[in-house]
Length: 133
Image (tube, rainbow, N blue to C red; front, top):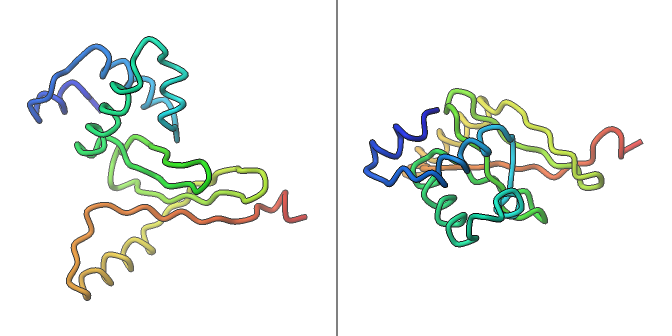
């Protein structure tokens, strides 16, 4: 994804910090604001939070709630490859899984109820096979 193009299309400033943060983000599966703050101590926390908010509003990032880990993010590279997450309750391992069937059911149910879903995230707490044995 070309973040520069996305920012310019939305008439947002294309700052060196935003480009630097995005390049780091796109090489990670899941990350938190704390991960960014640790990796970019030269960028203020307020700037990091503003960038996360902006990228989420522009659908560049997807918020993922993983319970005790707090809010995590992932680059929303393509809606065709949407997936959900399962997190082991013991070792904290995170597994991503395809969710086409589940998503179809969620959107169909929302339509029946007269709702329009702008964004969704499904996270499942589980015990993995290694911790379950």
